[in-house]
Length: 207
Image 1 (cartoon, one colour):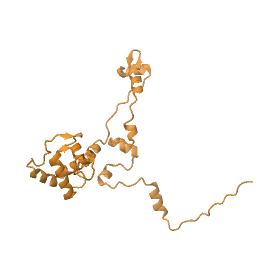
Image 2 (tube, rainbow, N blue to C red; image 1 turned 60 degrees about the vertical axis):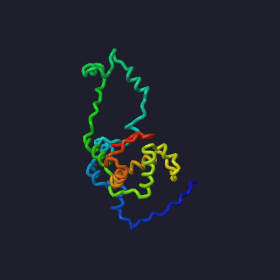
Image 3 (cartoon, one colour; image 1 turned 180 degrees about the horizontal axis):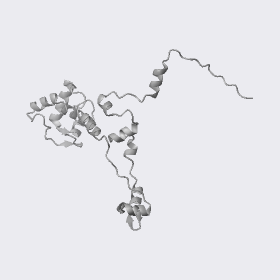
């Protein structure tokens, strides 16, 4: 005897717009940034768009974990006493080897340059640090300059900031010329130029 199954009665929902619902389900999403929307090709797939723009869809595939075993096998692979890379086209045809794939640059390589330019621009030109934060950072810069490790152990580090947090906040402070130039004028230093102080506990990324 089969087990009887109870099925819920199907009901047609009259209040649902089928056309809108199907569009929502089949849509891949909208690109809100007008500059990115201009670079994107709607008639192409996501992977094709990324590859033509010189970007990576999957970081794990683009920057794979190096296989030293594979490198050793490629280096040791010898055909009749010659490496495969040294064989010309005729010898490859005789030996039945495939022609090496020549990597070409991306078709829309300018997209990467435009994205780098966008990233280098300030996200919010109107952003300003609070006066209290500016005063606090000015104190640490006056006392320790760019020695972030010494700032951590300072008795006035009430927020218990780490050296990375100090570096981030100070670089944010230096990226706002309207506020940082005032500090430079008070210290009688060249305006618009990073102070020539040694930077400790950090990899300098000032440009």
